Picture 1 (spheres, rainbow over the protein chains, first blue to last red):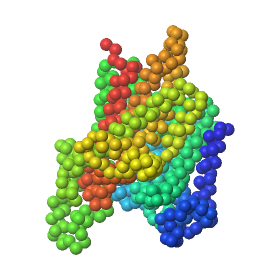
Picture 2 (picture 1 turned 90 degrees about the vertical axis):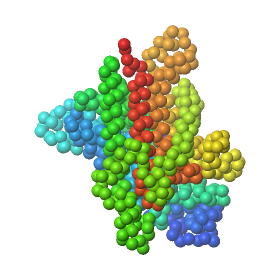
Picture 3 (picture 1 turned 180 degrees about the horizontal axis):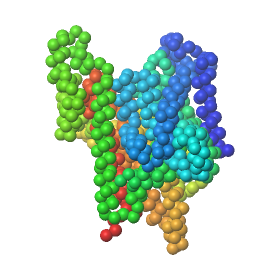
Picture 4 (picture 1 turned 135 degrees about the horizontal axis):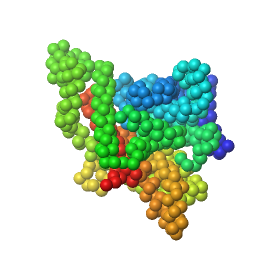
Length: 271
Length: 362
């Protein structure tokens, strides 16, 4: 095992663990404002200090992890649930008109500046976590569709698929029973990467006020709130940023590590 | 037609598989897409280049039409009546109706769409509902902030990425390679708006080298450039990290090619072979990525402009959204999408022109 995979999994598990743990217990209630205790540096009572409302930053980070992970995970879900079937379908009907339309549609979505469209969507439908999920998820669809098609195409030429066809299985059944299990590894790796991109995207959207709305905690908005306070209390800005950085870094390292683990033929140091 | 497309997809798909699932996937897929768009033509004759160009032109036009339809329909379903928003809740019904007809809101959708598109084609973006000035004026004022910012960031990103990528590839596995790759991992993971805040904290608040935000205008070009420096750096960093990784992997691909061995056998030193042969060839895919990054930078500027209080397109779009000034939102988004699609098209064509395998043999 490479150190990258270990470090990456460790970081990811810490943050995912924090998010789950927040359902059971958080150090302080983040909806209880305690202005007299505002902008305290990290100390024994508040390990990561307090923000401009006197809220405990560690608790905010834990609740924010929940939001980030939920948004990014659901956005990946949209990409997988829509993209993978599209890709499987394209591969099953390779060369047909439908395949052409699906792939052209993919290229088209790729050509759009994702951030601008995400801003447009959240601006039009109102800022909310759900709209952020949709806005991020849409751009995951072509990634998964293209990858699925790419991975499925060579499988269709293999002998075991031929024997399945001889047995009289339909294209749909072959896709689900034989193609899908063979591309799962690839999807897990890609899912990890898209997950990390989703966390960055969620942070950007909620930073400009188009993500999850108060009182839901989110890392991006913590940073937005901290922007004017950065000179007085740097920790308010440093902590959420570091959380985003470490989580994304962890997921990226984990994705790279998993790819090497699943496919030893690809040398990890090449990309 | 279908046949060539299908072939191309298959080739692209193979390449996508080879490079899939790195954190630069999206960009990588693009890279391969472009690389193979070009390769798929194979040994070229003149008419094939023409057909390729026409094919790209056709898909450019289709992209633009669909983009305009999507943007128009998204804006149309925006909740709330802009007329009543502008006049307030106490407005009389006949005043509202008058304003609606003045803004053209009483026309059928299809008519409004074509009015809008025809206007766009003539450079007439309509009049802003809140500013009461032509949208084209609003845009042309602000584009002189957004565009220089994107170009500045692109230059910085290239200046950082090229040496880093080349150094890492030439010292593969060595200490500098490991350091640079570690740094790019960090660079890819850092949210650029947070990086911007940290830089403000260090360079504007503590060291007082730069101002924390605002833009003095271009009357003094040096001041203008200085005030765009921090935003450009924060915009460029993640892109530089991606570019350095691509530069490195592209160069490593080249270094394992036969022609490098030939060059070495001919008596060139490692460095000579690297600079004279490998780097030049490795630049081809990297250049296409640079073209694509320009659009990332232009769109990414929206957020960075917010942090540094720069009066660019990003600020304009946010103000327009909160004021329900739909025509401005529509036009700015369309302009950005248009620029991105055009740049992608130009990259496509440039790629065909640059790749030696596509040179036209007389």
